[in-house]
Length: 266
Ligand SMILES: N[C@@H](CCC(=O)N[C@@H](CS)C(=O)NCC(=O)O)C(=O)O
Image 1 (cartoon, rainbow, N blue to C red):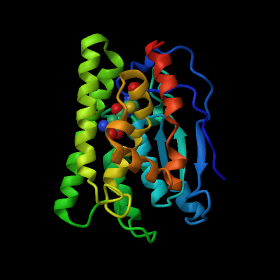
Image 2: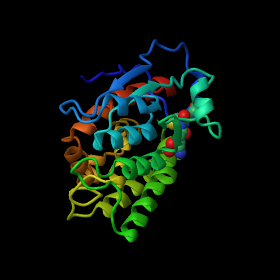
Image 3: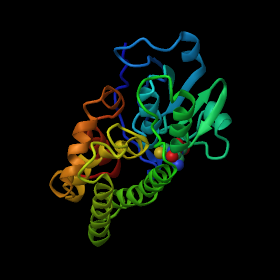
């Protein structure tokens, strides 16, 4: 069984969620099996793992990708960020930030998307034959964490400025965004299939959700990732061959359509 949440509105961290008009009805609790085609994981385990998120949250997609990669069955609870007040669950589980994603394991919360990915990798790292998401080598691990943090600060920052500015500021944001993407492409290099090497790893999971915005980068900012960063574009296509990625990432068209709607972009 694979349950889809129908996209109705894309939200981005920098957006003031509360300005968005009438929320659409949403599905707010879905049990997600390990993978569409496998039956690993017990019902007991499924009951003890919950992911609270909003379907179009790029940060939250990381947590769901990690769970899918590790074939961890989990319950998905949709937190509608268009609603002003955070739910009691979110406020209780993440009182520091009242933000999603939140992973709840055996009743206890893990917050922060990258932190969640690391936790999933530690707890369920050896439950499948696939390697750990984090590199085994400490130097490589440190490097992966560094670039994941670069994505959060620089890439996400430039993306936000691209969609929220006009004129010169927007052109500057587009140039910065392209610079960041080129840097990431250089980190990927020519030799390896994934940022994690032969296998999709931590840094792939950290960056991939942002590829759902590539279509929007081109339409809105003239940043053509396919033309400017062909190796990065090939990496996105390669990742799309994975079931976990198809299960989690919304389409670029949906993501951009919703950004347009929100920002009043013609
Ligand atoms: N650094 C955090 C960012 C999480 C975050 O900012 N989440 C936003 C959505 S993108 C949120 O839940 N905001 C709550 C609100 O808007 O009320 C992570 O990586 O998980």
